[in-house]
Amino acid sequence: MPETNPGGSDSAFPTDFFQRPVTALFASTSPALLGLVMFGVASAVDPGVTWTDVRPPGEKPHPLDPGFLGLVRPNRYRTVDPESMRPNERATVVKTAELIDSGEPSPLVDQIKTFLGLPAPTQEILAETVAGSRPPVLVLNNAQRIVGFYPLHLTVRFLETFKRLGVSMFLGLSGTVPEGRFAFDYVFRVEGEDLKNWATATLTCEKGAVLGPLSGGRASPLAEIGPVARAFEKAHRRVLE
Figure 1: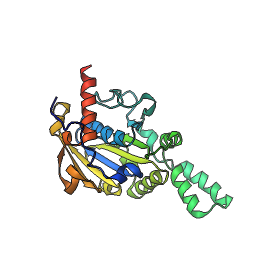
Figure 2: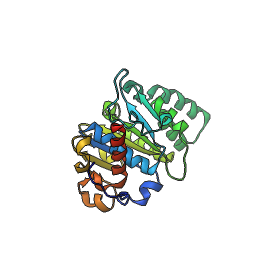
Figure 3: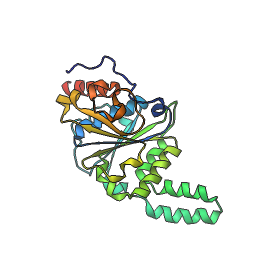
Figure 4: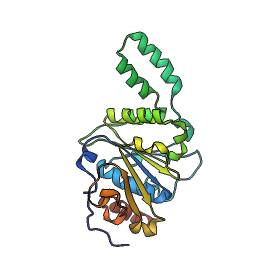
């Protein structure tokens, strides 16, 4: 194992990152590194992170998927078919008409309309989510499979809905990063190759108020970022078991 910062440093992330709901986009060309980096950061905020992997039926998980490795609690891990993650447009139209007829205030109608427009699996996850002393974190990995379903204006509305509900939303995307990425509060880029050389792979913050090794847009080795380093060390032990 490569040498890491003993215990690691969590100072790369500001207090607000842990105390208020935020949205964060993590992007990489390496699915293995991406998943473990997200797990490290997300579990530092919420040890009981809820993890959803967008995966077509019958497709096997990546060998280093945090859920497959057992890093995510079984009752907090699920997979969803990409097609099930389309916006729920029909429900939005029907229910909004009912709300308008009921005389509900317009701002409330807009908020409910946006929530109902979320895909059914996401609504179910939110319904099961319980806030604690820190915002609960929902992770949606392999989101490159569904980004085409969401124009920028809809993405912005949905992200605001998560925060209004007191939930932090982390999105993992492999491959080309969409132009609308800066709609997120934080944008991170992971660069590297594989688990063997994870310590020299890097994390860069393209948007967001970060501290220490990540400040100033610097590309920081993953071994220097405490929560991330601990996630890779756990993954390494699971692979060797």
